[in-house]
Length: 302
Image 1 (cartoon, one colour):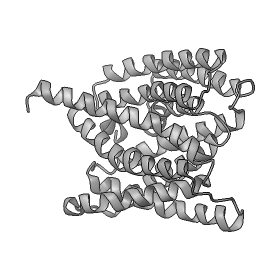
Image 2 (image 1 turned 135 degrees about the vertical axis):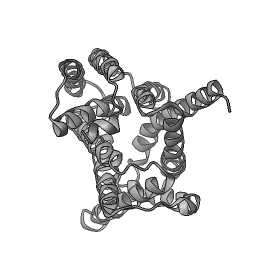
Image 3 (image 1 turned 45 degrees about the horizontal axis):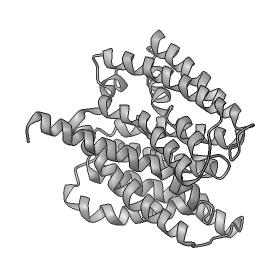
Image 4 (image 1 turned 30 degrees about the vertical axis):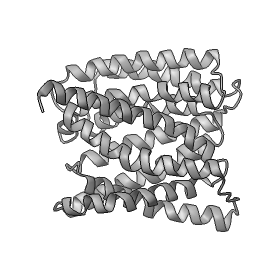
């Protein structure tokens, strides 16, 4: 395949992945009305693990003890804690607010890396300040928007923090194979099950396997989890990590469109003001990141 064809193919892959992950907020929002949030996460990744196992068994590499530890931590933060915050957040706020707030995760990731390496950049923090000003406006707008709440928006921010930690530990594994993805999902599933059991048997949260929940689980497990991660990793291979990361910022666009069309939610004026500020802050950070010569993984280990 020629270079231009590979780039075009990678572009299509990343766009499809962004659309799938943008739609995942809508399906999660609908599914958590019938299933407890962590039971939904456990079922979702249980099915994804079953799908990925036969695809990855022949591609298993040799991992060190440190790699296994980082995979476990990536699963804890990127799956268990992330979906603990996101799924519970979506029971209190709308999908559009949640997707915009979670899309600040790359900025939080950069801040985390800077803290670890103790090397700080003024432009990154100017962009971060602008983005978080917008984030505050969106969270605050939950007091006035129908279907939104400050509590749900704060939980969504917890998901963004968890994703930043996930990215840090996943990058330290130095392996992007399907088997690595499977191991991270397995650890995340393992840590999530106790929460699901607690929801059902201790807090007696109702479980209703409705038609909407059934289709939601299918979409989230097969498309958003199994296929989504495979496509994302392939897109990174064809475009590179930094260029691929740009597509994270397009996810809210697909979520907002789906939220308006399918759930009939109309974002408030404050939401749009906050979204513009978040977007401006992200642009500043993106421009600065692309001017940096060292890849993200190299920066972690500096």
